Amino acid sequence: MKKELLVLVAATMFAVCTWGQTRYEITHVPVGVNTAGSETGGVLVDDSVLLYTSMMNQSANRLYLVDFTPVLTQVMQVRVGADGSLGQAEQNRWGLNTVSMNCGHVAYDAKNDVLYFTRSTNGKEDATHIYYTKRVNKRWRKAVKLGGDVNVEGYSSTHPAVGYLPDGKTILYFSSNREGGIGGMDIWYAIMIDEGKPGNSTNLGQPVNSEKDDVTPFYSNEEGCLYFSSNRSGGQGGFDVYVSEGFRNSWQLPQTLGKEVNSVYDDLFFNVQPCRCRCVQEREDTTEVVAACGFLSSNRPGSLYESDSNCCNDLFRWRRLYRPQNAPVAQAPLPPSQRALDLLPLSLYFHNDEPTPCTLDTVTRLDYSTTFRRYYQMRDEYKGAQPSPVDRRKWDSVQGAVDMFFDYELKKGYSNLVEFLELMYADLRAGRRVCITVDGYASPLFESLYNVNLSKRRIYSFRNELLHWNNQALLPFWNNGSLKLKTVAHGAADSTAVAPSDPLRNPRSVKSVYSMEAAHARRIDIVDYEYIK
Image (cartoon, rainbow, N blue to C red; front, side, top):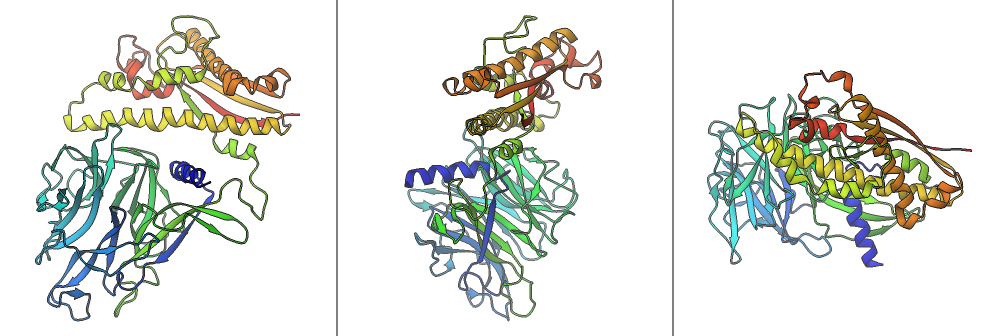
């Protein structure tokens, strides 16, 4: 049972970016950690020590007082018990703090045992820079300012956050008001080449960044999502927490986390941390699993203050709760058909002229799983074929677009297909009769007749997938007419938008085969799922 629960929690973590059947539970971190000053950015190190940023009265060497001169932000630490309980707060003793600078905004690179954090001088708002320290033989080395162009004189670089590329390299996200952004504070990234040596900094661009301030990024590798805060229009008010799926600078349209998380005040430093809490809780109407945990900083009502309410941020804990499918509920569960519809439109992608190239046949012996596995192994080939941009600083963006396609479109499409077929099988076994509508497309490289036949072969590979799936479990329903397939072979996708001279039509053009425009055009779309009489 315990093993099954862990698997369930892990599976939920990958789905939270788009899953709507969850709820958030937010609690105020107790006094002793929170003070009448400002507390932000809780991060767990070694799953047992909480680091966060707090205002400190340097002359008294204790937490926030009414009469404070001078006051600096300092890194605090708290021991976290196995049940999530918090010990006594104290100043960090790992060399992150100084007696003359604001220190805080910690990010932990667990793979390389490195801490990133910021330092700045009072009165110099444009001089916040990112530092790092590495742990060697259980001791943290002296902190050093990060190299490369992450730190730019005259501008702020702050709010570091750590993610990892598919090859294991560390990618550092951060906020900056430097030139070259879209407006205000923007989120940037740099890939760590070696210890303390980042590559060129790149703006994430739209839709993540806006003309307003976009700050406090946090990347969850498990979920493939970037959380950040923005004061753009469309939120609850002040800074709101948003989430966007993707990585590097290839992102889906950000979505607000809504009223369960956001308030009309400032909500910042949302992050995902290991859960040191009960994984299951019982309620009268359901059993819920804790799918994810983390911290949030906010000056919403309930935050502590000395004389001006809502002046200062406090730390809050959040938990994302998920109800398992087989848990008892007070109301009827969502029918499988509706869950299948929620996955639509479902796009499945193909390499150039696949399946079964160089033929006018409209059928193929291959199923989609076979073509997908071959395609997914071609990532390096696609990366190597990308044209080198004139501005070499954009090379990471070009390579990132390929990673984004392979991991978050090609692979995600196949994962959604597996879930879709399971849901359809449940419907068929329940006695329902199902019809699926599939559209097929090709890139405009070949002539119209060839593209139409190629689209038909792609649709046919999906038909084969249905018949081969799960040891031909769907074949009886196909044979008795309970499962039907409606198809439309369109040929070239958006061909009217492609001029005859466009590189996508040129067989010798790399763009015609390996570009992301061509990759997106070569697909089938499952567009409808309906019951039939």
